[in-house]
Image 1 (cartoon, rainbow, N blue to C red):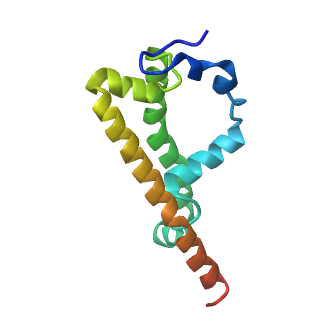
Image 2 (image 1 turned 60 degrees about the vertical axis):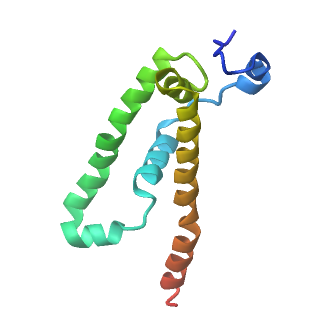
Amino acid sequence: SAPHHPSVPPEVLHPHYTHTAPPLTLWPLAVLVFYNVSGGPFGIEPSIRAAGNFYSILGFLLFPLVWTLPDAAIMAEMGAAFRDHSAGAAWVEECFGEAWVAVCGYLIWVSVATDNAFKPPCSWSTSRASRGG
């Protein structure tokens, strides 16, 4: 049986809702890290022009590790400490109360919405530039 958090109704923890996806393999994980850290291929050309091939590639290889390893360590520790499907929310609620869970959820939603809002116009301008327009 899944661990029960006081703010999660037991019917939500039914196995139909709590099954997990298969684990990520290395290649999909690398693609996710690349797009989450750098926002995709935009900006690679100016980096190579400014720093040269070697230092740009070295930066693109090292920066995701430097950026994501501490984050992964924090997530692993929270996942081990809070055996709950909503470990991040459970941690915030335990430390700061229910009001801050709502604030964190809202801020994450705003972050994702604004991050996704700039991608269509950026893709459109890139496609227009590549077509010479």
